[in-house]
Image 1 (cartoon, rainbow, N blue to C red):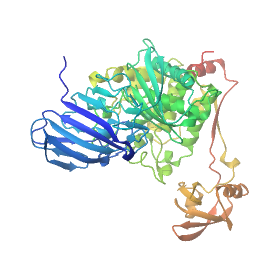
Image 2 (image 1 turned 120 degrees about the vertical axis):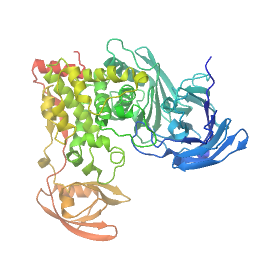
Image 3 (image 1 turned 180 degrees about the vertical axis):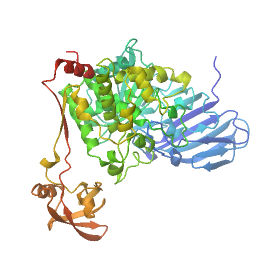
Length: 598
Ligand SMILES: [Zn+2]
């Protein structure tokens, strides 16, 4: 008989119209000198300080029936007491963030991550806890519960008693309540559930079939001999909205936010781009079940939820995941090779269009994720490189480099599998992770290929990646649209804001910046003619690089007139295609890489 839990949480969607949850927290034997409790400053998987405590309202503390002192001692910490007996805290949390990272409640559904609602009990984060999930007191007809939080009395999909081994586990099982649609499939013998909230008309049979193929392929990637998954069940929690995109990984579930039109509908032919995007997102978060939820950077082996946790390795944990997410779509046969190359071309184009790749390395981008990648502003395209997109291309180059230098006998898959055996499989027992300088020795051990020089140039440095050369080794032609073929350009990114043609970013070193225009300036006329996005494009198409144009623009309320010397266009666009004349050996490499066994 196990001991009753000495920490007990209860949550009820108390006022859906006001977006308020009420939380009860009972703590047996609190610190007699004053028990501290706090909400995390961030949620693992999303590297930004979010200060979840800012949504806590109306908190009160009791010992027995007696109300006791509660003092706030920093932005996210309270101290109750002193006193002895069972401490009972009651508070409300405002939940109106429709993202996968926080909490959201209205009359149609409730969603929360524990990091937004359940306070940590200082010094007792390693204790098991009980969790009671309650239905709304009114409304909520037909609501059920979707979560992979272990049940402790609640029926499947029901309200009632759940439990967690410790706060870390509690924080890693988000909860959805509502009248979601539901479907189940098996991959490698493991039950996988999909729930979809929000209005939608999804072809669930199609979705089940495609996700099953992707999940099966990933399980076999990490455990080719045993096909054993690291969880007993898995849950895709999906929120369908008009326009939205996001995902957050957890140890046996993921929360996804997607455009309802990206979900497949009955009778849909092929894999339209929106659906490919959704499958890529699901594949990405599922891959994280191994890669970042179990294989972790050493810096994340024990999260410190009070402050930033620094690592230079997000290019491995997000970059490799971004590489494999689409690669597993083609390897599992869910998309064809042409669609895969189209997706890869788009990633290359996005990286090559960002001048930030020349000033920030992916190692630096990883370390500074907290203040740069996650907090982008008008200058970010000039200063920040994405450790997702460039990290995916680094993974591609490493994969192809290893394949070439091992004569096709080894690949990045082997490095992943060694990482999994060394750091992932036993994570719960060992709690150790990949050291900051651990990748090169691990890759050498797994493949016999030394990658130190490559890492110095591609990861710690800002050299352009040798994409064309690497792709040639697998018979893929790399074509970059020549900037000279295009209309000349101002070297800006534009958006129409409240009818104003606004420079969102003046790209570093390009024509507009050299002439003195800035992000935020509103372009009103070029060569004396009023312009909008369409007419500006038409006007530039009739000029050539080197021509001068006169631009009138407002900065705040002051009119500027500048002469801009037009430069070659920035319509960099990468197109990847199969080399139909590739030699047999190269074709074999390509088929092996893409999992084509024709
Ligand atoms: Zn990710």
